[in-house]
Every structure is written in structure tokens, then in C-alpha cells.
Length: 220
Image 1 (tube, rainbow, N blue to C red):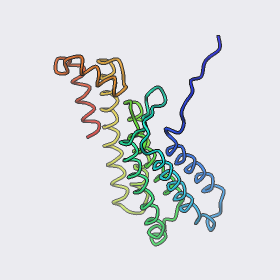
Image 2 (image 1 turned 60 degrees about the vertical axis):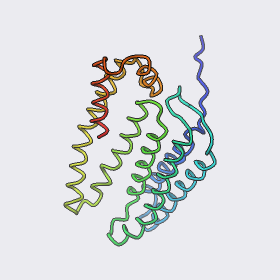
Image 3 (image 1 turned 90 degrees about the horizontal axis):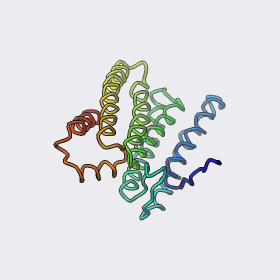
């Protein structure tokens, strides 16, 4: 019997794909270009952010699901995508001169900034706890490195270490909470969890209560 590959509407995550492709191109350019030619990298990153923002604006008013209803495209997700992309673009612009003055002109900074934005966009589009976790970890791993980017600054190293330790504990609580919620409801889909709570009594299920409590701790 032939395996049937389900059709995927890639446009649902079109802005995320643009950011991912842009980040991959910047990784290659950071390796291949000489140091004096790497000044183009932040502007290419800015172009990628602008393209993702333009696509997000053209998608306004749509309502679609993809990846077995794990990712959603609606005005709620697009609203936050526009905010994240606008903030990322402004941060890129302000960082160009700042990094030049500080003497930290490294292409990796812009790559990490794109991946952090990608993680936030994934969380905004998530309709499943698994996607929420993937987006959160994509964001967190990039920010861990960004926090310690200025290696010669004591405060930068200290903040990176503190954030890494805090993030590690939060990840553990979050994963355990997802596992308990799945055990109680049989799904990680946000709508499925909502429907389960609507049918059952939330306060009489200790497993679900414990899972929700751990999720709150993990996100907090």
C-alpha cells in the first residue's frame, strides 16, 4: 500500500519560512564572505524581515489551519506577527550603528535575532502545545546567546547564565505540564483541551489541575 502524503498549505507559515530562509542565507554568507564584505548582512536580514512583514499584511483576514491543525493563521496570530516583525526590523536598524561603535560587528547577532523573532511568531501561530514548546525553545535558545553576546562584559555573561538556568528549569516544568495535560485529556491541541474542559469538570481532575499548574509555572 502506498503511503499518502497529506497536502500542506505552506502559506500558513509563509512569513516564518521567509525568516528561516533568510537566516540560513545569512549563516552561509557569514562563513563565506570576508570580514570587510559582511556589512551587507544586516541589510539582507532587514530585507527578509520586510518581506515577511509584507506577506503577513497581505494575509490579513484569512483563517486557515495547517499541519493537522497544529498551526493556525488568523487575525490574532497576524496581529502579533506584525508586532514582532516590526520590532525586529527596528532592532536591526538600531543595532547596525550600535554594534559598530561597540566593536561587535558579527553576523551571528542578526541571525540570532531572526531566530528569536521566528520563535515568537511560531508561538503566536500555535494551535497545539507542541508548537508552543518548539516556538518557545527556538526563541529562548537564541536569546540565551544574545544575552551573553558581549563576552567581555561581566553583566552580559551573568545575565546569559541566569537566563539559561531559569530557562532550563522552566522548560522542565513546561514539558512535565504538557505530559500531564496530555495524559488527562488525550490531546495537546488547544481546541481539544478546551473541548475536554467544557465537557468535564476541570476542578475534579487532579491530573489536569497539576498539568495546568505546571504549565503556568513553566510560562511564568
